[in-house]
Length: 598
Image 1: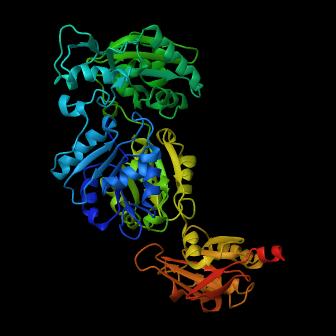
Image 2: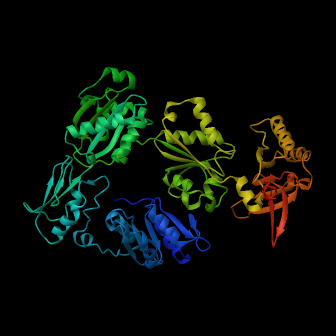
Image 3: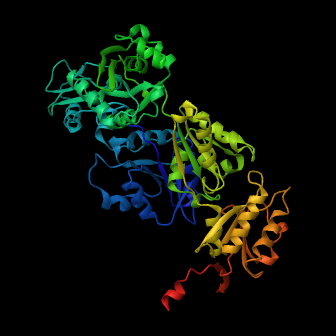
């Protein structure tokens, strides 16, 4: 089992160097550091609560700490060893690695990887791993067990040197070649793509040798395609557990039914161009000129099944037709790695990473960046990701090249990649989410329209500024950008006058630039027509980054020389007030709770 999304949990600075060493060799791993003691990709305040949360979520844990901490944290949550995620303890100096839980579900394999990286021997304790050199209930990626419960009895027979037979009916069993098998015996291991009901003395593995090609009309209900596939596999006595992937033409990359089928089978969906499918034309059983006229290839289901398989794959189930669906099955002589063929549906995350600090980055944003192969963004924003950007392909552009960034992200996703278009703050507030949708709407490129777009919200600069200062936007407020690059000043001025008349708290984005020094004083003067000069104004600069400053001045004092493009300006309403409590000054806008309580 390949273990991903690993949490490297560090509770003391002494373990941070080891954590960095491991993150460099464990793709997708992230450092979770105890707040106030360890700076990592993610921060947590309570060790026990954080470990329990990770374990409950099924996230693999590598604790760079004492094993006792991990044991005490997860002990109340233990239930079924078949579902426990891997939990490993690594000494802070990297001198030892011990898999504590999930040994047969990736922990032992992960311990070997960590041991190799640290130059130490992992402390494995499971009998099968130590004696046999492998775990029967932890087969290679893509392989699946028909009866996992039998692994214990068959492994026990092998350990006792009882006679166990091996029957390979499909694919190969190279990974089992280190075991000693007999010609006859009470126990058996069978490698097959056939559907069957084994007993407790026979352990059945299904290798990923079947590639399932499908086609369907646009917006076909998922249940129709799923039903056709299951009926076809059952009619041929083929096991769904031996299916390596669902394959189709790239025109169907956004077809919900295809993705629902892949999810039902627990396998990836992979897609091919018409040209790639047409290379299989000579091997099709049911080539169609009608299909060629519509798609550019003579067969979608059969062609995709063959294209997804080994070059020596054979079409064992020619095209089967439903009312609006088709499917076909090919068998390969060797296990298929679905990630090495075709391409996935492209995915574009439009990610808001907050103002800068990882503490203000949402778990969804962190997960999106970790899942991405490519990051697109303004260089400074990508730099703010720190270690999270390591191992990713970076695509940078200048500050004013927003459309170029959005286009690049769409093109990469259309090529089947998983992409994060990185924005500071929230992507839907003066950022690139709207530009992505504008390009999709305006240009309507088929390749772009087939990708999956996910907008990941972030903490906006106005929220961060408000939180640092107190609660100035707790009542009605508005945001106005003072940049006239995309909006005529006449429109900006009209909005300023409306905000002044309505007495809104006003948050200014893009308050000044090197060439724009007069808009902010003009905006100030307009707001002064509706609120006093003593109105509090918050100037928050470099929020969440080194050099952060938060200052409160009055509206009459506001001038262009006090701010820059990295400053968030929050102008209070006539109700906004500032007061001192102890050593801190706070700014807030009453919402009327005091009157309600009277």
